[in-house]
Image 1 (cartoon, rainbow, N blue to C red):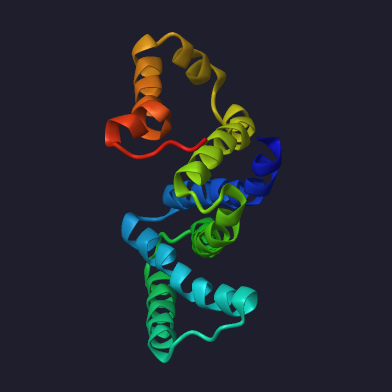
Image 2: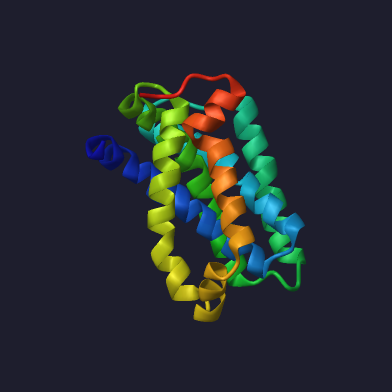
Length: 178
């Protein structure tokens, strides 16, 4: 349904951007710094919740945010190989993770509050949204090499069938969306 896909698209764009920023962040920082950067989503969740829903976070969340911010700033200041690009994409990743959670809540009505259906549309749209960046940043030899590996395509198809399709839902005993 194209009308549903259009309503899911903003969520998909944020989700895809979150994936990209997380991976770019990992190119520039160590995993421990990445985890601190990802923890910034707690701070952004409080801010975005206030902006979108008008609710004030509880004091415990504000204290946790202060501790996380101090840890992030301290980690960035003491880590000699902490690149500015890593810092920027880490902060962006935290912001997009928080926005992702909020957009899930706002997008669920578009799919009749069916999380499986939301995942179905998001997976389909994400594959389309991520295709142009993949083509731009990946060497052509690697992309063309994928077409020469039938085992990879078999794993992708089996993973899709068992993960998000009607067959996979039947295997898990859950109801498929109509």
